[in-house]
Image (cartoon, rainbow over all chains, first blue to last red):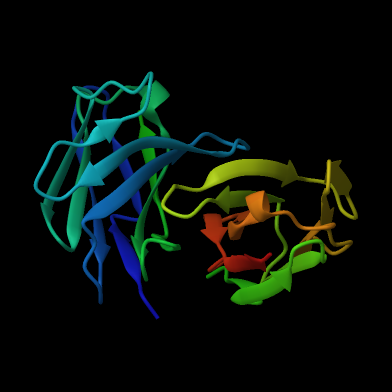
Length: 115
Length: 109
């Protein structure tokens, strides 16, 4: 079946640095990918929709200059957390639809810890 | 690592019939979450279960968390066309949140 990978799985960084998270569809092409964020013991919250060849669509309250999204190809979307701060520490998950957009495949997630 | 299996992958029902999707984890979960994705949309959070044996209801939807906190189910009574979509479970554990592959609910009028 379709697989979505994320890299890295865990990252620890210092406050003020930028962190890039990659989301790849391994055996299918995805013109759209979704980025989510999960705070501890809370549900998944959609941050933005990544669109190949055009700008990402951000959900209300998500700073687009803070969370840079680049959908470089049909198999790769990246989320860059710029000037990270401890409050950005979270679990970030991407997903990609396939099979007529009704099947959603989730990546394994990236745990970001900002010191 | 943690694995979450969800069955069935597809379920066709006549409108008015009941529907159930099951989720099983390879490891004990700290919590289980359920999401619904409408066709063409993105997964939307429905509910979170935390306690062993917990049962929660939302109108026609009943969610259960197993005593061993390794399995869960979502049951919809008397399905309606608005219930169409994909239902995902997601298990919370030491590795973070692991999603099942989802159950596609198809309703025939």
